[in-house]
Length: 244
Image (cartoon, rainbow, N blue to C red; front, side, top):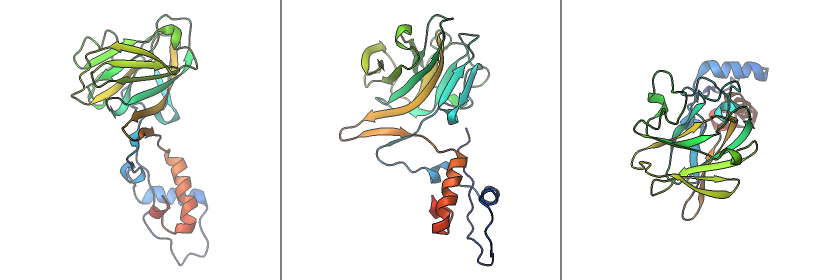
């Protein structure tokens, strides 16, 4: 997923008597310079950082939308629905999902877990299933979620505890520990298998409770919406960078 936003660095010309239409301004901004994600998004103490699905490392039957937040698997198969988080997640950071679509044509359902293997380092085709194709390999932990609990509309959280156990909560009811033995000494990426009757999910974000506050992930604005915001604010700030 591209995280670059292109905006103009240059000041407006004082010689121009008429301003270009917004579409022309957007095009000029794109051509002239680059603003990176680190400049667009500044994390506060309560921010966990952006969290979406990894755009390149995904199952061959997965289609992403909503800027990497929504994932759908072809309904004519029960497999090839692997997904990974775009960044590593913290211990006790609860990854939140919503089940958007299910199909009774298949048995089994969503599988969730974690891996120490960065998605960007994976080469070749992904295996068709998390269990057992990935879980038999070092650095992968995943467990199935009870299919009767993850029907369309269900809300799910999963996380790894301080003791290395994989836990899940569905519709605000704690379901308990799915497995143990997750290696928390290394960075972990969330791993989701859109499997069986589960055909569509949305990544809602994540939360992590600290001693005095709760930290949350954020959603990135897409390039077009951020450009529109820059254009609007630039009318009063007279500087593209100060308009952000």
